[in-house]
Image (cartoon, rainbow, N blue to C red):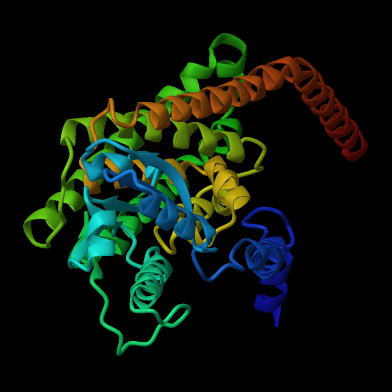
Length: 397
């Protein structure tokens, strides 16, 4: 019973992780917040790009049918030959539909012809509804060609068919999907565990006051570099194992990917220091990891396709650093994009880093401004304790 009382007293003392608060907060986030965000279970208005080389009334009619489905939204119609792979960069499309020249003529003369479809298979679940909808459109068109308008009768043999191709991960390899997602998630999580208690540790060792008075925010940020170096080495090692031992397809430039990671480690480290700033000790700071790491894993497109999420949820997910990491993973590793191909995403990421840096600097200088008052209060407290000690000593004498 004494052990139980001691542990209960420690639990509510504030000296460790505030589990009594964390457990309730996690339950509320999962049951309320996440149930709203993850309520979609099908692709809605997934972006589709159409390469229309026929540019006929018939292909425009097919385009309108695609736009009319609840699963797809036509993001662009291109009338010139383009490499379909380039249209997937920066998540601009989930599928690319290719209408060849002479499609209208072949349709009305009864000549067998194909519509090409290229699917982004970086997440194997995101195109299931699109495939179903496109097959239905082709089935209805073939039925109409045979005079059975409005039917999807499988016995009707039409001349139009889909020629589909899964890009980037055609064999549905887990090494190119979930395994990569877990590698970056757990790496980021333990990097945060290693750095989020840094400010409380410096405060307890009385080093933080000196840095605030004499240093700059960079004096704190530079301290994450050894941890960032370890994280980068671990990721390189993990990718090497997946490439040599597994079946990882690394399509892009390895140097480009490493270049991006420097910025990712920097911003994740600043967020780690920012969220751990006010914690009383490193143990309490560790529990704050859930505020900015798991959200990117859940909403960044690795655990489930972003096409299942509402547009506002996809936009909101960019407050989490892992969301950006998964953007770059899909573009560079899976799709083979170069830095120029993802310039728009990288530019937005730099803006995100700038906002985080401003918040971090504001926290630093606000703490510097409040430090003299804090030091005066501590000095007064010490003087009072000294007086009490002196009074107690005189009473004993």
